[in-house]
Image (cartoon, rainbow, N blue to C red; front, side, top):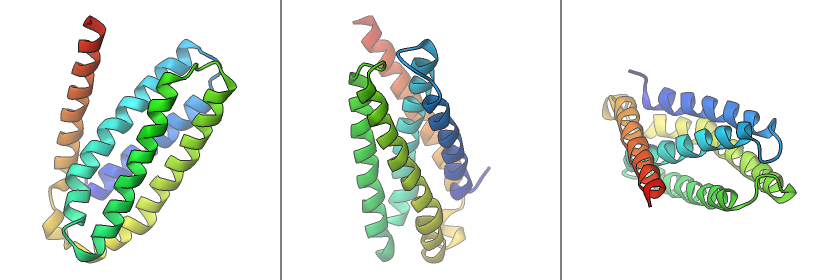
Length: 158
């Protein structure tokens, strides 16, 4: 199983590709809708799993409290933008403008996490303390994805 750092980084690499893929689409096309839906649900489950595994461990360390709070705050800001995008007309120039903001902000967040937060976390959390967290992250992400899919199914039935 990958380390927590590798598991998160692997997701980030996937999300970067997804962001680029969405940016290459246009209008209210099936391609854009499909790419956006995949990105939206993957990021939602990633963020929940990250907060419940990695950030919950990081916040238990003195230095980690500020970093964890900052990253969770950024998650909320990104989530707010994603919810706005869900409500907007994908063919509007406003959607693309807002998406570009999301892309920029999320790319910044991922870079900051990988370069700064991971480095500091590795300094303050002993490897033995966080062993198995990659597997926990993956399991929690899968569980969260199941909850998201069930919620979507339930809303389609209403």
